[in-house]
Length: 291
Image (cartoon, rainbow, N blue to C red):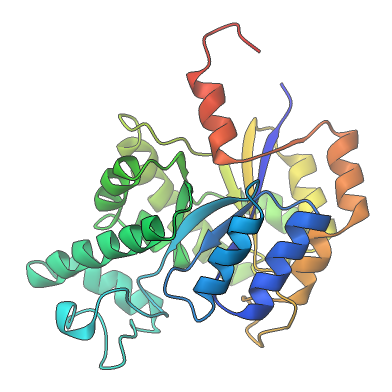
């Protein structure tokens, strides 16, 4: 069976440079999907672009750290500072959401629902859910996300899972970081797949992009996909027309990869089918034996 590959640009709406890169990668390259930060500085521009590109599958990039809230400060005072910013320390935010109960969790649910509602008001079809630093898969957050994703009609959800040995065989850099990512992914993926068993949401067997975030070269992508034996894979990027200065963040190299003729030739030669989460859901729902 041919591999179905979802190619996603994260941080859609973060800036004009990111938005322009997403549009170029979709129109001229191999991008199929984008994940929208509804509170991003350029979110409204991103939405306008998305309406011009109806074939681009747009999902919600849930933001619960290192970003702005959808709700005002007085509605989520335990989650944000006076400027409506979540903690920039992703680990601290994750620990707070896990160990603090009561009011923190009530505010968390309200904020997550507000981000879903904001997306809905943009009048875009909700393709999928993922999140900054994969906090959408956090044990406290995930049940809320699954409930709302189904209610708002999403097709799929990203389950973070990368193969450590596969990544290291292709690129030995970031060893300690990759080990930490692999351990974290193993915990999150196990919880996600268990909770998704009774859900209508689809997911991929692998979601590639964290271990080499900010440095998703064509050699790395081709190497990983050549080594995987999987039917459904998501590869996510952080393309931008400008380098952000963050070694893990938006960058011009990811855009170059998505525009690479060599990458497209590889997909064609390996019979890899570019897809979206909606395509995967149609596969699941199709009657047995249908094409």
